[in-house]
Image (tube, rainbow, N blue to C red; front, side):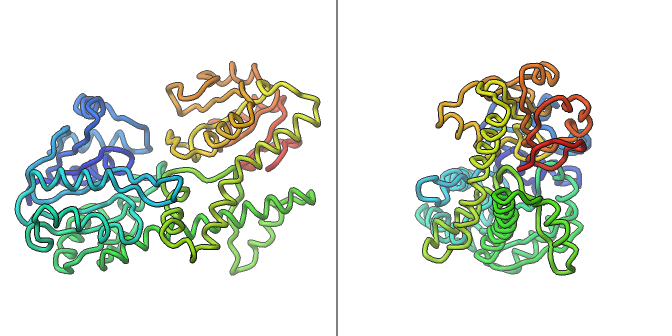
Length: 408
């Protein structure tokens, strides 16, 4: 087949492009970010991910190139950002619309446009089809539309690209089967072909399900905190039941999926999403809950200077450098709203300064604080427990191995 043009070389698009190239398919990765493209063409990755460097080097030996220009070809995969509008909780489709229009400017007749970006149910019907039709293209003849939502998570992307099942949504099942064959070049799991709206909805439902279950654990933590009960012990015992699997509470929910996708449903179905909205509010409230716990510890020990508090972890989850929607950034925003300035921050995986009072050296960071708040359970801190024993520790991830740490 002719080359694939993969548009958007971020956390989803780049690993996907490399995986296709590794499989022997000619790929051109396109991104408007000139510095990113130059870096990739120079053989330098733009973010860290387990196994990504090896995949990158293997892909470079095959036919892959990186460009700021869209290509004239037959197959396009769009992996561009899909933010939501905070006021309305609805999807902002501007990046997808822009990418589709850029494809239409150059594509071959009969080209296939595959949207991998997570979108709200009905996005293709409401925004993408009209955009194509107003340019005079006949969908199903001049171009074919498909939705193949990504299903991978930072920290385990390479494995999940190969081993997670996939969904292909298509107007035309024959075209859907052809694209299924394309993805089967690297995906070893089941690939389901369905209609586009089912594909759209299934991805959002997956992340909403997880958000609701995390919210239950977080609400339990709040209940147990009010009556001085050990939420972790209660969850451990409850999970001994064969049909119970309660997740672990935490300082909030981050990332670009679980913390965002449920809002699409809330925005589109405001009268029907009571449980989903409550879960979102519960999880969004957790950084505020952590702030309350910090206040309690400061009062208990007579500490009045917020600059003696240090937050460990800027990423949204352990062992990745992805800070999108991270609970720590949410907590810093809460502190800013309450004029609580000067809190120290450290994350071993974040190599550049992105917030005020961010330290690059762990021991320097520890020397400046009295209260350490563990926001992310990186392997780094698990391997350095001996260095934090002398601190007052608020452990929001339940990873501390010594007595006396405070819990969420």
